[in-house]
Image (cartoon, rainbow, N blue to C red; front, side, top):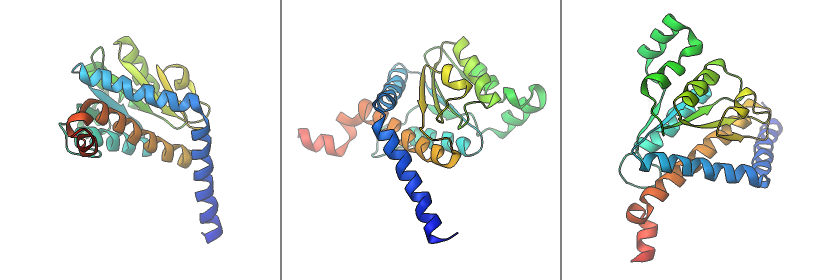
Length: 204
């Protein structure tokens, strides 16, 4: 890969982020997503996440930021990636089919008032669509991170964050960016006044 090709890839990332910055409705939806998670967590509920491939890794990454920490030490937050239990995934896949891999876990673990963050760059992953359907049945708030078209999941989510790109790598780069922003909204809204050293020093 030549340096010019590397540069072109970086420029495409920058162009995608510029398109995100210009979309005020999308930025408002990111804030809405973060506050929906805040509401659930403050009510003693949890955040579940699901995705396939790179989106599975993003699900685990975001869940870890909530359970552990993002910017500063504070109490852990209740979050779980439905992509990590190999025994559950293989049992469900064997008994019910891979399409039910996440839906079955939502049915078993989900409660009214929880949040499900579903990631799919195409918006058409069958197991993600099934998980969203299961979440709706249980009155679980659904947040979708997807690509430009939104796919089928675009119309199924309470909050849909559609990255303005048709290409998987650039969509996923923005998904983890949004994941970090949502975690930051959650962390600082719930704990910032007490635990954020910058906010504490400003009020001291």
